[in-house]
Length: 236
Image 1 (cartoon, rainbow, N blue to C red):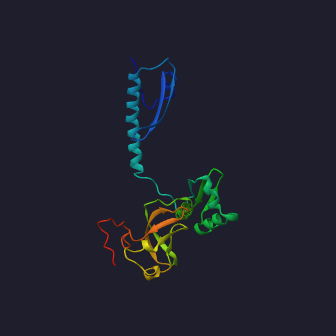
Image 2 (cartoon, one colour):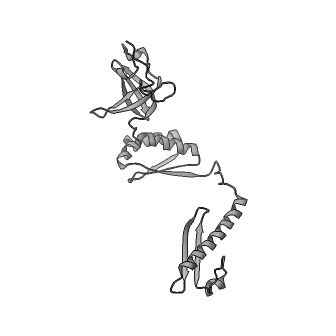
Image 3 (cartoon, rainbow, N blue to C red):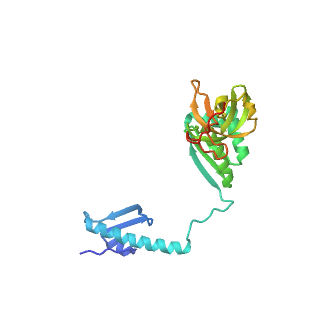
């Protein structure tokens, strides 16, 4: 015969055949450790020990929840640190020539930024907004736009054959004059001006890797892609 005891004392630990520690949450076990003084235990004993440990764990968690029903909020002055991993071939872009880019990130965000040779970046600050600002600035440098996705951008230059739009961090792409509207335009400046905010879809890349964008397939009010059924007939 055997007895399974919970929350054992020193003598019980010394005289017993097994010392079993189980930690976890309401969802399940996160870690366990067992010291055993006999050759082994049966599956039945193990099953009952785990069941009894669960009962004790749920009881303790219930008492803890009475004292603290939710996670405590960080103090606004508590130091924070966030880690992100970037491809090693992007490290140079984040640092910039002579450290120009990373200095700008630090100055604009107010966060401390460290980067190592493996592409691991640590962003530290007592201000959560500063960390987010630095994270977003770094992400805009290293992230790649997704083909087929719709972005909000700004017209930065108008030329005879279209308009260049800044749409993904510092990335620019061309909206060819034929991709501005579903009608023939004499010149892009007929409907666009520099500094104007527009919605664009990333169509893809040309043979030289240049970004191709389209405005006419995106509803400029809602940002939703215009399907074939929704397209208005082109004007002559």
